[in-house]
Image 1 (cartoon, rainbow, N blue to C red):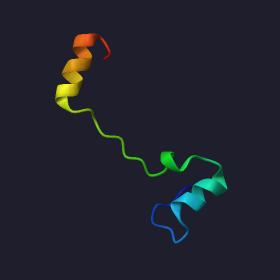
Image 2: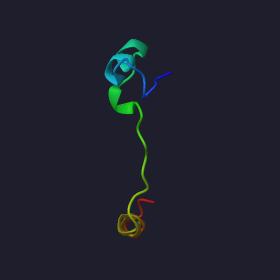
Image 3: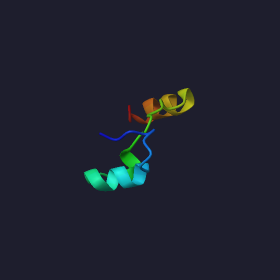
Image 4: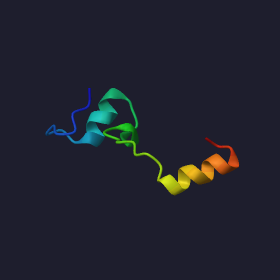
Length: 45
């Protein structure tokens, strides 16, 4: 799989395995509390 600490660049590793570089080493973050409250109000939870 992709190694974010490898000598080969992340972009090149992604190319070699055929995936988008934007999907590599992505750390999802929770939406801020204010955004969560707003989404709940509009029914997008």
